[in-house]
Length: 170
Image 1: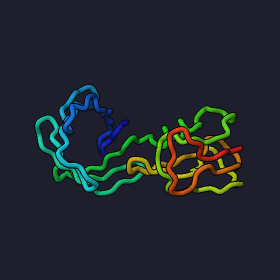
Image 2: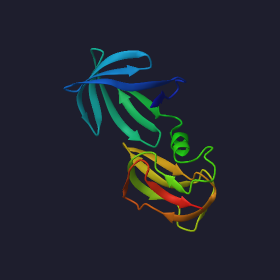
Image 3: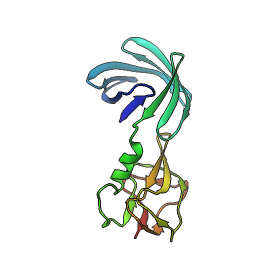
């Protein structure tokens, strides 16, 4: 997943290369490997050692794409994949898939937070159909084509898996 810190034009790619056990990890950020040890993690923040240096991050608030945190007393806004809505839209049948696909499918697992349409509603390609919450992020699931909502396959508060049908659009 790409991350971008506000006011810094570069994004970076981060991933876990190896779980060494006991909350120790080898991670890769862009092309560099680092050692990470998680000391404490809860809903308010995380304490960790990154390359032999202690750091403390406090979570302030989160939205679909942004996370406001304070790391070592410095406030930072992190944009978690500035193109997240486009990625979800593309993988839910949009962006060049044509009109052949009837079902709008979820490309992420999550909990249905809200449904923005009803059966019989007309929608345009890109209209929000529902909002999912996954890993404390809210992601809009958008129509993959113009049409009419034939049926809604999910209910609010329900959980969906990747690939589950969200709605049928004719």
